[in-house]
Length: 94
Image 1 (cartoon, rainbow, N blue to C red):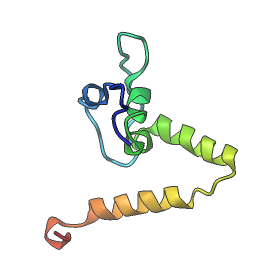
Image 2 (image 1 turned 90 degrees about the vertical axis):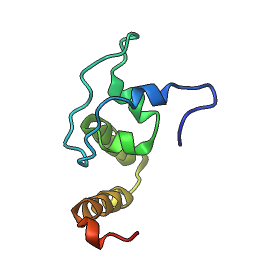
Image 3 (image 1 turned 45 degrees about the vertical axis):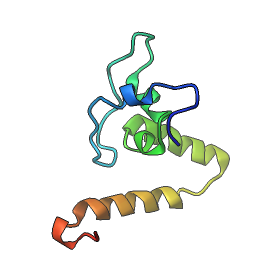
């Protein structure tokens, strides 16, 4: 995942604040000049941007349910990120 060949402008959209808190951040309230909220533009850049945005996560969960897919992989991703954020710097693998 990343920038599309046509240049989607993900770098400029990603310049805004990110929480990295695993979903406690609400969707971006600001909008671009085209009227599209920044949150959905970030979702197009990478999966992490989708999953750390509360609205993006809810929509992704709805999509998984609609497709009949298991949420186990999603739960595993959050567990790994939670564990990673709780490790002390001295105990992290280099």
